[in-house]
Length: 275
Image (cartoon, rainbow, N blue to C red; front, side, top):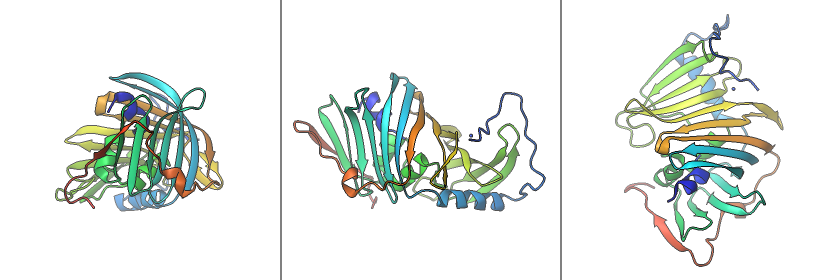
């Protein structure tokens, strides 16, 4: 699969908590003192949020494969329904990833192959760089990243960011997202919003997502910008949500895509034992 295809299909603080260089934020007077209380804040945030969204985003990406800019239309409906469509300046479709949570299809204009398969973590990971369930990827895009199963958690106040930093250490026996991995989360004191998350493997940062430009839409607080760093191809991706519609619930047919005539369908496998 080409670097451009991975770009458009990959995926992927009104408070910008990452402050100016040299700025230090003291913890609030009523700061939490235990990791468990901050973790509960994060769980509440991640477990909430909108159930559906139509997002028009401006995307810019730089990687070892070069640079790309353009418009992306994102349709999301929980659980696990997602469509990401790259559009040309004239709003023609140039790439599509569509999944109903069970199956997915991905295609890029000009490619002879159309990729299909089950929406297992292995296959979602081909586009998101980490093995996520389809619904977890939806959560990432809506500012509600999943929390990994963990055996140990630590917490400290990060004065540079102005938020709590949680470190979740994945279980050694876990065979999924947490296996051999550590997750860091920066959690705001006031409302528990996650303003940044990192996933590390063997001490190396695999994914780093920063959320900013939060705004309230239809009663829901959602990020207006995602800045994503991926280890794969040293990818630096920014999604700026220009339009956020939380009132429209996309229909089932929006999450299916028929490969164009003349393309070759290639089934992408899942690991043995994957449901």
